Image (spheres, rainbow, N blue to C red):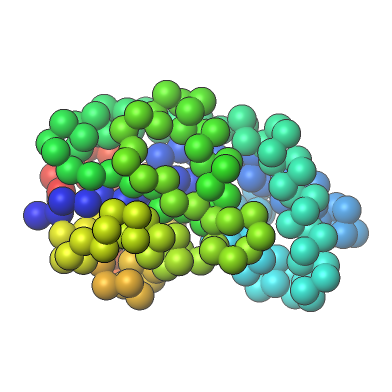
Length: 212
């Protein structure tokens, strides 16, 4: 059904919650706000600027400062407070061997995404890695998907699917005219994925290949 398979990174390929929530906690603390890490999972998935603005009402200046503090921690330490989901390597190998083209499309900075995939020994499976730019020019889910499709030569969008764990993934896919398979082992919920219009819902990693 699909010749091009795009994967979200956080919550789909790896559990990055520890590094992200610690980094956000540190950034908020520097801004005079104390939060428990357990309350910061909402930052996993959407662009940082969106999250700081939406959840804490930061203005442009404060948002830029918080993002800078977060990235300093994440690039040094949080990046490696991360673990690949069990079985994701087998899925990627199977998809690759089936002849499909594979990409990462993530709102995480592309530089960090490459480092994470290298750490897990998964980078060999990907033909394209499309992530956010550090200058903020590209960051929304639909923007990183469009960039991945551009690098693939703009294929027929009916032959492309995104796999992701949050409604941001589903909504981003819909905006560019591709299907989305929502996964339940990440940070989203069945209700949010269904309400956003996911084409399929995968209970676990093994389910994903069934829908491909």
